[in-house]
Image (cartoon, rainbow, N blue to C red; front, top):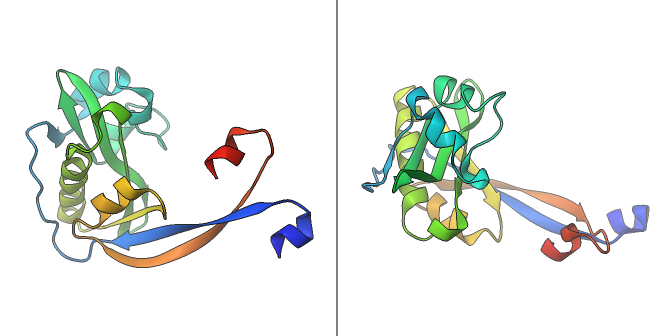
Amino acid sequence: MVEAQTGRKVRYYADIYHVLRDSVAPLHHEAARLLTPDDLELVEAAFAEVRGSGWDSLWEMPEKGVVAGAVVVGRLVSIAFRWARLPEHVDTAISTSTAWRDRGFAAASASLAAQRLQEAGQTPVWSTGENNRASLRVAKAGLQACGATRLCHPRIIGSELSTTL
């Protein structure tokens, strides 16, 4: 229908939503810990993909939000943080540097962040794309699928977007 209306090729993509209804199962990793405002330099020096986003400043994220991360050899390699918040639910975002994936950092960081959110009386929620296998693996660590949204992406010929979709 969108293709017929716009004359452009599109790709449909599902964003899958999860919710943590039970107490979080602690996942320990010696590199994972909660981050505080004292860790601002660590966050600033991190790989761009693990600095976090959605805040007015990097300082605001550990000061006003819930942030956990994995620190290896003095470098932040994975981060889990409060992305968006409603009165009872908190969308949690996570990112791990490509070179440090598949080592349990994301799951351990997400577990710490979720535990802190639950202690504050909030329910962690998580969404991820249907083909983000790493994120889906982390979500399976105690979260329950609760819905999906079908997204419509335009295919733009000759752009990076057309190759990733």
